Length: 496
Ligand code: F6P
Image 1 (cartoon, rainbow, N blue to C red):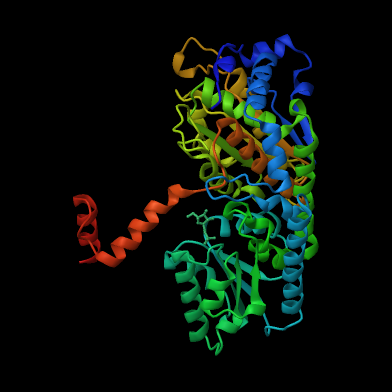
Image 2 (image 1 turned 180 degrees about the vertical axis):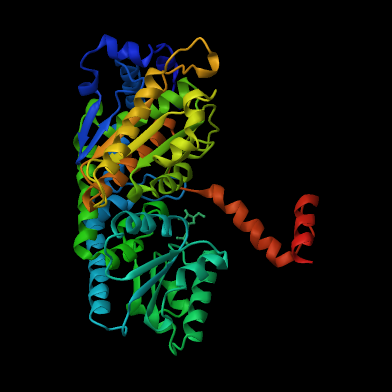
C-alpha cells in the first residue's frame, strides 16, 4: 500500500508563489504529448512533491506495471486477465496485436460489404449498447461526425423506451441496420432495446429482421444464440475492458459512419500517446504527472471531486465518457490483493461544457468551500464557419477562468472576495481531429491506470455494478415482497 507521508510532509506554497519562485514554471510543467499541449503549471506540483511521488511510484512498481500493461501480461488480478485495449492500437505482444488487426480487418470487410449493398439499401445505423458499449462511440460520433457522416448514426443506451423512440423517429426501418453492442451479450437493457428495435423494423415491413442485425461482442456464442448470423458477428477479445472497447468492434458506428480512414487515424492518435506513455521518463510523462497532481489533491488536500470542462461543443460528451472511465475504473475500496484501503480512491468526476458551465456551476468553483481541481480542454481551431469572434470569445473565457481561479481577488467586502489559489490544468489541441481525439482518450486511459497503480488498486474490474443488477432481476422475478419497506412501498405505488 502506498505511503503518502512523504507527499504530505511538503506544505505547498500558493500557486502564485510557485510562479514567483520559478520563472520557468510554464515550460517546466507544460508537456507536448502526441499533439496535445498539457499545461499543469497551475497545479500545486512542485519539485519536492514530484520527488516524493516519484519515490512512491517506484515503491508501487509503476514501471513494472506499465511494462505489464503494455506487454499484455496479467494486470487485472481479480479476473486473471490482461488488458488488451492497447493491442488494438498496435502495441503489445505480437499475438495480441495480430489478433486485434485480424478482427479489425473483419470489421473493415463487413463495412465494405455494407457499403456495397450486401445488406440491402442502408441509410441509418441504429447502435444499441450501454456503458462502455455506448459512451465511446457516442463521443466519437458527436466529436467527429457533426459535419458529415456516411450514414445517419443513432446510439441508444437507456432502457427507457423514450430514448429508442427519439432515435428512430426519422429513420426508415427498411433502410436501417441494427448494431447490437455488448461485450457480454447478456446486458438486460441492450437486449431489450435490440428486441424493440427489431419489432420496430418488423412493423415497418422488414421481413427478416435478424438479417439486418450485426453483433459487436466478446461473447459470440451468445450472439449466435440470439440468432445473429456468424458472418455478421464482429468479435473482440474478452481482455479488452468494456470502458476501453471503442478501439475494437464496439467502435463500429464510428468506423462505418466516419469511414475507415478516419477511424484508423483515431487509433493512430491513441498509439502516439501510447508511445509517449511507454517511452517517456516519469519526470516528463504527461499521464504520470497528471496522475500525481490528481493524487496530490485527493491524498493531501482531501478533495472529493474533479471537474472537466470542454471549451468546445464537439467535446461536450467528454465528461460523460470520463465519468465511466475514471469512476468505474478507480472507484474501489480495496487493493488489488483485497486489502481495505484507508485513503481516498478515485474522486468523483463531473463537468460540462464552457461557456455554459460558467453561468451555472462556476460560482461554487470560485467561491464555494470545496476545493475542486478543474480541467479545461480547448481547441485552437473552431468547429464552425461563423465569425471567428465566437472562438476568440470562447478561448478567452476558458483562459480567464483558469487565471481567475488561480489569482483570485481580495475585497474588503467578503461576499465580493475570491480567495484564489484554486488549481486547474489546461489541455490545448490544434483541432478536434481524429488523431487528437484518439490521443486525448488514450491520455486519460493511461492517467487512470497510473492513478490505480499508485493507489494499489485494480482498475480493470467493476464488481460494484453487479449488486444493483442482481437486485433489479430479483425484483422483476419476485415482485415487491421480500425487500426493505421503502423499496416494497415504491414497487406497490408504481405497479399496483
Ligand atoms: O454495468 C457496467 C458494465 O458492465 C460496464 O462495465 C460495461 O461497459 C457495461 O456494463 C455494458 O456491458 P456490456 O458491454 O457487456 O453490455
